Image 1 (cartoon, one colour):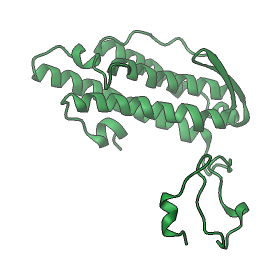
Image 2: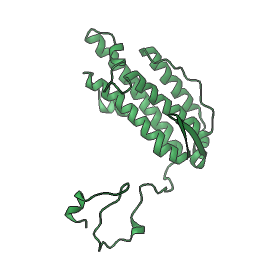
Image 3: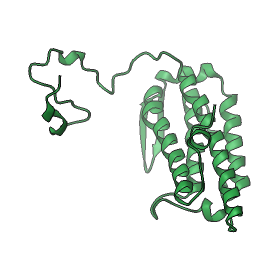
Length: 207
C-alpha cells in the first residue's frame, strides 16, 4: 500500500510514484507510461474511425452554432470567430486544426503525400467542405498502409523546428492528443457562448 503522505510527496521526473521503501514490487514491475506494448487492435482502428467520428461531431457543432445564432438573431460568424482566450484560436480555426491532424496524421502514417484540402474555414459551407474533404481522404486510405506505419520514421514540422518520431510515437504522442485538444476547444467555445451542445452528439459523435 502507499503511505498516506504519498499523495503529497514531491515528484521528480515524469510520472514517478512515491512507494514505501519496503514495497514488495520490484522496480522492473512498475510499468513505465512510455513503454510500448503490442496493440490489441490495429493502428488503423485506433486512428481513422476515431478521426471520422470526431469530424462528424464537428458538423453537428457547426449546425448547432448556426441554428443558435439564428434563434438569437445574430450572424453565426460571431460564434465562428469566438475564442476561449484572446491568444487562442477561434472556433473556425479549431475546426481547421482538427481536420489538419486528421488528414496529416493519416497521410503520414500511411507514407502518403499530404492531400490538397480546401483551406478556407470562415463560413458554415467552408468548414463543412473542409471536413467533407478530410473524411473522404482518410476513408480512401488503405488500412494496411496505416498499419504499416507503426515503425515508420516520420519527420514533420512543429513550429519553426522539425521532429522525428516513429509512427506509433507520432500517433500516440502528437496526433491523437492534438486532435482531441482542438475538438474539445471548439466544443467549449460554443458552450461558453450559450450554444446548448450535447456531449453525446456534439463531442463524441453519437453511436
